[in-house]
Length: 178
Picture 1 (cartoon, one colour):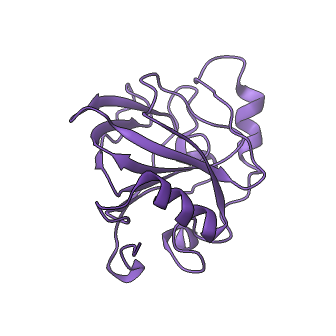
Picture 2: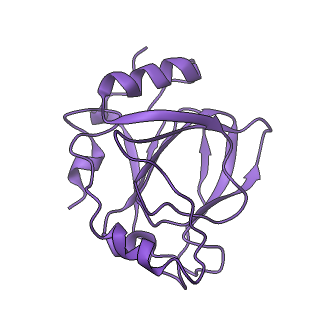
């Protein structure tokens, strides 16, 4: 399988300010990144997982849709690859005036920094599926922007960013975020 070359990749980069108890990108100042059409439409979920595993930065851990409840992760950054369908997502919290609501589709990759609230708004075609992957040696948790999560939020400040791009390896958009 051949992925879209990094030089021709279209990337959307978003800084999302904190809102209520959602730290979003403000806590580490690393952007939410969307790699548009990084993987070809012909790519199967298993071939995407194999590619990610071979790059060696993240471990694919699940195939599922996105939860319809706003949540974030405090223990690790997240790499989501759309393996089927098309959906409208919300990043930053629904009541956040600076939220983003992109439409993503098969082949897109979303790099979600720890602390960024996210949820599914609409499964446009039915059957929306993503591959969720996390940095090697890290385990994800679930936070909901509720009181009592403040200590978890503080821990996000100390998380390491990617030393290699999860899709492109030694080059790629995650390496140019500082």
